[in-house]
Length: 233
Length: 173
Ligand SMILES: [Fe+2]
Image 1 (spheres, each protein chain N blue to C red):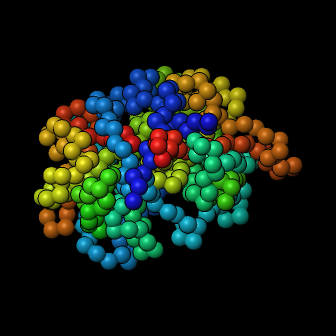
Image 2 (cartoon, rainbow over the protein chains, first blue to last red):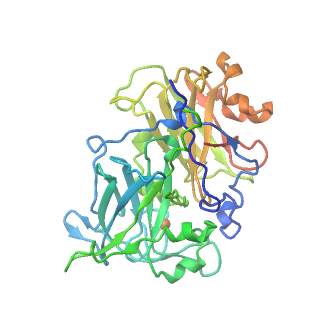
Image 3 (tube, rainbow over the protein chains, first blue to last red):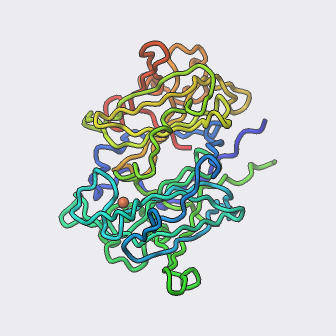
């Protein structure tokens, strides 16, 4: 059997380093040793498969038991492709976020903002055959965090993606256009390349917006691809 | 060419997507040699790191409807994660090499801007001596950070040190 093709290394500055001094949490958690470079084996080139049959989709975060959550209703949609521009079909996305007031439905979140009995804040969707996904939610609120004086996280939705291999696994956050807090956020700004940061910001789209119902945001996601075909093959 | 989307930290609230049953890869009725894998995740001060998300993926036994091959465990307040799974066997490596039995782990948490990838090998396994990936790590003390210790019948212990003394070897694929 042919060896798995290597994954493409990250373009310079497009992925955050482990050590981001402005993000205090990285100080004692970033490895000091260089990672060991590993050509992929079957272990890294394969990955788990999730199907909606065993892992039911839940594409509506905006309602609990038929009751609408508080806040601005939004539709988030986009396409998952790889670095060769090919759609990533039938892959699972996991989503979680704060409610409209900036509070997570989580025991560790002690921010003094109201919980919403009709908002749990987690979802799961799958891409279709063309790599497209879509879900319904409410606009997450900003929330304070103990990193620096008067630190607030910009509005964001957390995303978890699998893709075809364990090496394509991605955890990221989607931000909203025009958010003034982005300029002050060490997590967002932990990505050195400005264009790579900008790609974490969803685009408002009138075409995704549904009249009398919800605002539409597009967030396209790119998973790692394989390197070029080795010479001579 | 499109460029891969940037990673961001999983943060402290990822339990909203957690299903604790996923830490048991045998829950769907898989049959085989059942083992537990547990350990403590510590930071550069040696302090236990709670609310970490540890993910496990194994190429063997092959995943099927009764064995997902993938698991996810949180660390508790003492920084301890714990999986139940099936003991892997050797699998093909690059070229015509054979890889010793191993598990792949991915470690995520607040303060980690990207996941950290490592591997778990099993102490006493003769194939460890010729495993091509273990062989990439020349320093025996560092290589030892990739080897789980027997901790009783069917129980394996694998601690993860993110920074400093005894720092676990992490891989970049
Ligand atoms: Fe968050």
